Picture 1 (cartoon, rainbow, N blue to C red):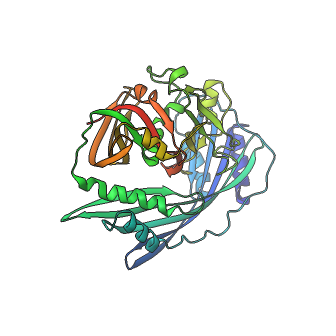
Picture 2 (cartoon, one colour):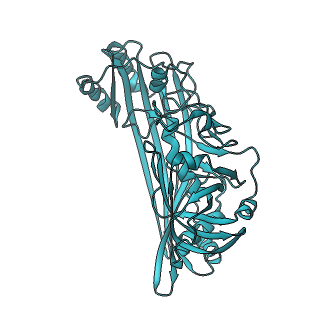
Picture 3 (cartoon, rainbow, N blue to C red):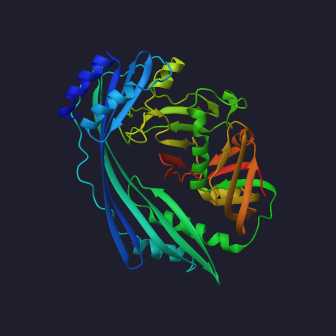
Length: 419
């Protein structure tokens, strides 16, 4: 915490003895926007402070862009009435030296290389219109009245690509959002963009009303992200049966230890196996939800910004499989079904009503072979039934920003209804 916040600590201790925390964040990012014959670079910086404390048996929160403004915000927030709630089980720990993120490296210019790969994948039927890449780094520090003093740094490398597919006089825009944790995977991005930009131009509706359903990794990741509230909420919908939520063999975990050693409340990061062999085994907790449930916090207090209090959310959520198979083996196993290459609308999951709808474009599969593009299709039905029909996973797991990283491979659903 900045040296000039010592006075804030003293004032918080007087307001809420033993029941307060202070949070500081400093972030920087560099963004490269590239198009044919055009390049533009943007830089962004953010710095903010937040305080949370319990007074009169109720929580208080204040935030500001400077320590001086935060000092004034403390008095204003103290006058706001909030519902009573017991204070959370604050973490504690020795003071650790502050880690620094260092200078942010500019994103590489990958436009021309991605354009070449896209043209090859689409056989000249698609053109890269715009590629935006952003690299960023942030440093966070948290101190509280129980002696906690931790700091950590995180980095990110993500982007958005927009391609245009053309067929005669018609055109369609395809968009892909991606995140890279290591070396840029341009080949996979080019394949995804080619499908998104060209498949909708086929004008062919689905010829299959019921069959197997093969989900491309980004589609499977969107489905998993839509299920995430089941892993965080205090109360589960009535249709959820913990012992058989998924089909046997499905494992889902959350582990952000490679990204940061602490969460936004100073709780150490650890792996949590949420679904094990198809059964709901655990839930994700921040400090407050852990207190309500009488459980230990799991390190999932997420701050979307210093401007809002932390809440229980996934941090790096992903499917796991004990015996994944190559994607080509999953394709060969489909006798009659559809491959969902890309969503054409956000995934719609009504967790209370046990209903889902996914609109997608893809490919018809007959006898384990591609049998023509499908311009648009919809899969709909009961979430409970869909989850128990997950049959297999491939080895090609990828992570996508949603906005936290969500990892999924190609997934085979043994039965679904299509329109």
